[in-house]
Length: 106
Image (cartoon, rainbow, N blue to C red; front, side, top):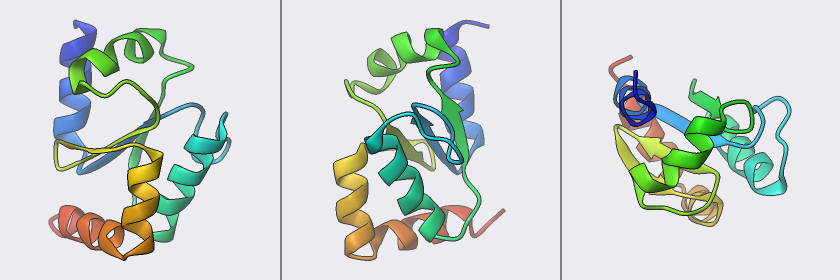
């Protein structure tokens, strides 16, 4: 499977997915750490892809999403953004609301 098709499948088949450096349990950069903590605070399950362990995704995701940096959060197949946007959404309660809506069917 082409890497872009694999990314597309991951984004479409997971209501909430973050592409990050490391894992939520062991993030490998401050941005990924803050972003995964914000997701954990929403108390819903989310998928993740460790881009360090998957160099093809690391290389091709910015082209797929048209977003140059990591982490990248997708909710219901749409790019939400990176760490700064996630922090802003978490601070005003929008992130939890978006995730609750996205995971209501699962």
